[in-house]
Length: 365
Image (spheres, rainbow, N blue to C red):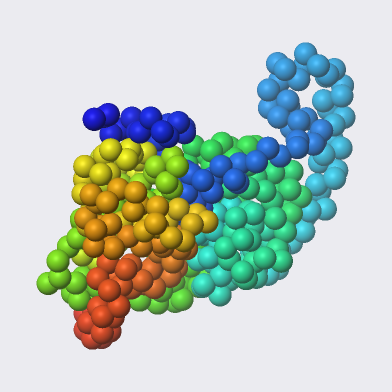
């Protein structure tokens, strides 16, 4: 059997994706990531800025005089925008924010701070209906620096990751303040809700959201404590085969709702697996979040030896229901518990919620 970490020969995709890049959008699968990484035509102004940051290349192609002239013209063009942003700070009007991640966008909207946003990434506009009419500044992995700066933001919000750190550095050189938000674990997501609440003056709303998420997490744990814990595999994408591993917020959620994440034995993050490894793991439950698919049982039925197939415990899951590391993780936890244990668990969850809320209120005093 082929080493699981190498993946099956049938899948010749990129190296394993881990961390925020695999979950970049607040969960964009590698397939979604590939769709969002389309090549963007680069304007002469963008090329100029890149060359300006690489002085050796720039001097080889342009004269020193043209550098100063172009830089001066850029400052003249941007002066009104920057002045407007500065007046917004002084006048106390809502902060001019740009969000480059749907999880951060959804948190701001849920906290009642949509008016602080002046621009978003393309994927936020697709998954957060409240911001569909806002200016878009590009994809998750390839936002346009020119478009961001033109909107005159007071601050740009993005998640932690290699690509995002590069964007942050370029924005900082353009004089834009950047906030970076890790969102791999539940604790980090909770901290993001709290941080964004402070940023936009919605501390009370953020605290209420966190109480509800923590109460639901406690309630589903109580409701499922005496249930069988099925060996579970969550599929992010079928081809190449990517899975939900250990050390992720989804892994923590699986544990909270009484499911054993078999992929922990493979790798942390969102590793690439192989069909051989999956078959050998004999999952009792397969939750398939592959984008654009619906009949997971028909696909996985090609491996009838899987206990999940034999017992018809293969479920197609809309990724947005459970995988966005945003402000509605209480709904996600409840939905995940029902997927694992069946709809009958809902009564037990509802019965456990009041005590969970009371315990949180008592501990907060």
